[in-house]
Image (cartoon, rainbow over all chains, first blue to last red; front, side, top):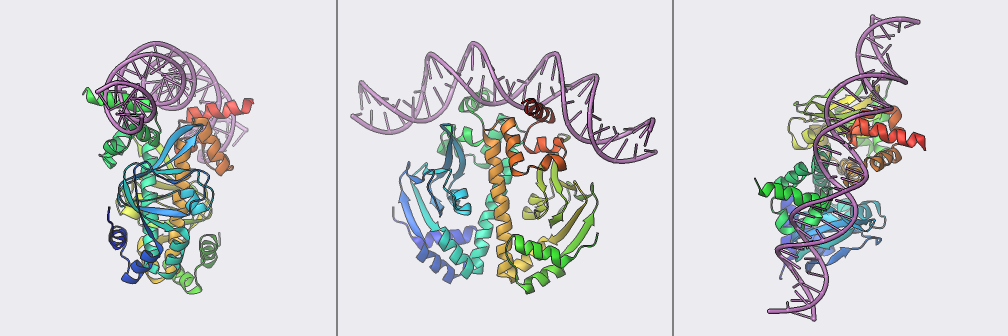
Amino acid sequence: MRVNKEEIINRISETYSKLTFECQQKLANKSKVLVLPKGETLVRQGQYSDKTFFIFNGCARAYYLKDGKDISDWFAFENDFISSINSFFLNIPSPHFIELLENTVLLEISRKDIEKLSDDFHDFERLSKIVVTKTMLQQHERISSMQFHKAEQKYANILSIRPDITQRVPLTHIASYIGITLETLSRIRNLKNRT
Amino acid sequence: MRVNKEEIINRISETYSKLTFECQQKLANKSKVLVLPKGETLVRQGQYSDKTFFIFNGCARAYYLKDGKDISDWFAFENDFISSINSFFLNIPSPHFIELLENTVLLEISRKDIEKLSDDFHDFERLSKIVVTKTMLQQHERISSMQFHKAEQKYANILSIRPDITQRVPLTHIASYIGITLETLSRIRNLKNRT
DNA sequence: TTATTAAGTTGATTTTTGTAAAAAAAAAAA
DNA sequence: TTTTTTTTTTTACAAAAATCAACTTAATAA
C-alpha cells in the first residue's frame, strides 16, 4: 500500500490541532510510516517502549497478561493514538503488549522527538495536550461505565461508542476490555438476539 | 487562615512545571484564593462549571447521583487539581457535585483564563499538559485496578496509593469510588482485622 | 478439500457481591 | 453531658457473574 507521510501528518493536524507548515515538516523528518500486517506485535511486555503510534487506518490493541490471562487494556482505530502508556510516560518496562488486529498503516514517533518538537513549537505542545486530554476524557467515560453498571449495561455502552467493534475485534477482547468473561458476554448477546 | 496567593502559585509551579515569573504574575491576576469550610459545595449538578480548583491544603470530592445513589467519582488532596471534568472540558452542564471533605484552601481559575494563559505562554501550555497527563495516568491506574480485580484487591490498591484515605474520607465514599457497596467494604475490612 | 486450531456458545455449579433491614459505634449538636 | 444524627457493622437472603467442562461453529493451514 502506497502511503504519503505528509497526508498522514496533515490528518493529525486536522483531527487534533492545527500545526504550522514548518512544524509539520519537522514532524515529517522525525517520524516514520509503518505499513504492517494483521497480527504484528509492536510492543512486547518487559521491553522499554518510548514510541507512540498514530493509526492512519486499521486497528491495534494494547493488552497485558495477568496470571496467564489476556486482558485488553485499550483499542485504537483510525485517527487514534496508541502507546504503551506506562512505558511511554513513566519510562518503565512495558507491562503491555501492543498488536495489530487488522492490516494497519501507522506513523511512529519517539518520545524524544515529541519532547523536542514540544519544546520548539508551541503549537505542537498544544497538539500533544489535546491528544492527552482526549484520552483522559475517554478513560473517564470508561470508568463511569465500569463503576456500578451491570455487564449488560457495559456492553451496551461500548456498542454505543463504537457500533462496529464486534465486526473488528474478537469478542474475547471486548469482554476483557469491559471487565467481564467471554461466557458472560456470550450470554448477554444471546439474550439480545431472542428479543 | 491567612494564605498568600504567590505561595500557592509557586507551589503549582514547583509541583508540575516551572512557570516564568511573568507567567506566575499573570496567573495571580486571573486567579482567586478561596478559604472554605468542610461541607461546602463548589459545584452543583446541572450547573455549568468552567472552573478548575487547585487544592493547597484540605480535600475535595466529585460525585454524582445515580438513581438516588451517591457515587464518588474523584478525590483531590493537597497539590491536586479538581474540576467537574465533563463540564470543564466539554462545556456541558455538570453531571457532578463537588464538595469539600475538610476545611480547604484552594485556588480557583476559569477555563477562559487558562485558555488565555495557554495561548500567551508556552510554559503555561506545558503545565496544563502535565496536569492533564498526570490525571490521565491516575485514571489508567484506576481502570487497571477495576478491570479484573475482586473487591478486596481494589481496596488494597487504593490503600497502597493513599494509605491515609480511611482517615480522611468516609468509607461510603471509598466504597463507591472503587465500585463496591459499603457493606462489601465492611466485610473486607473485617476479614483483614481477623488475620 | 480435509485437518487443525481458534473462537464462541451452552449448561451446571460455585463464588462473589448486592440488597434490605436492623443493630452498634462514632461523631456532631444541643 | 445527653441527645440526635451520621457512619459503620452485621446478618440473612437474592442476584449477578465467575469457573469449569463440554460442545459447536468459524477460521486457517496443510
